[in-house]
Amino acid sequence: ETGVTQTPRHLVMGMTNKKSLKCEQHLGHNAMYWYKQSAKKPLELMFVYSLEERVENNSVPSRFSPECPNSSHLFLHLHTLQPEDSALYLCASSQDSDRDNQPQHFGDGTRLSIL
Amino acid sequence: QKEVEQNSGPLSVPEGAIASLNCTYSDRGSQSFFWYRQYSGKSPELIMFIYSNGDKEDGRFTAQLNKASQYVSLLIRDSQPSDSATYLCAVNRGPDQGGKLIFGQGTELSVKP
Image 1 (tube, rainbow over the protein chains, first blue to last red):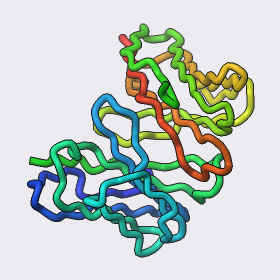
Image 2: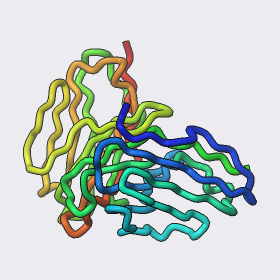
Image 3: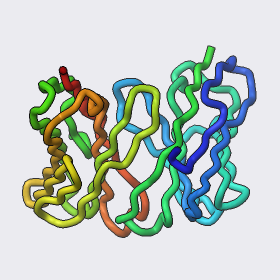
């Protein structure tokens, strides 16, 4: 149990569908992150939120839309995805986002497959 | 040049041996360094972090940092089959980068009984 819970664990969707990924952290952290992990590639940072405010958008296509209603919850809304978007999507949290020496704690991820 | 480089492996060591995992980084201003372990189908799990040059030990794990050479390593003593996983090196490039971590592609470690 990492303190970061992601749902669903697996998701299969067509390119025209709309779905959402959910992340919840129980660690009292102020910062939350979305990462994409593709096979044989490094983790790619997508978005950073600090106290519900987006502080980083790492050139992510607009078909990915994040939402952070409070410091414990983070969503990733998906629409009109492409086959190359199939990957493991990981959520992480840390105490703060503006300090460089704080480790991030990861959820187990959502395995997304685009048909 | 990749910002954070690791040999993808697989690195195979016999049970009881020392496993040595290496990572180099390109940004000389990098300040904080993290090692994560990721089992297949699971989330990355923090093993160690190091900020200062030298060695940092925690149980069977030792992290080594050499900022002059832009090199960080993880040693696993008395390797066990349960250590078989992918090990991710992550680097934070400094206070102005906030919480942004740059990850290497990971080294797959296999410990043979």
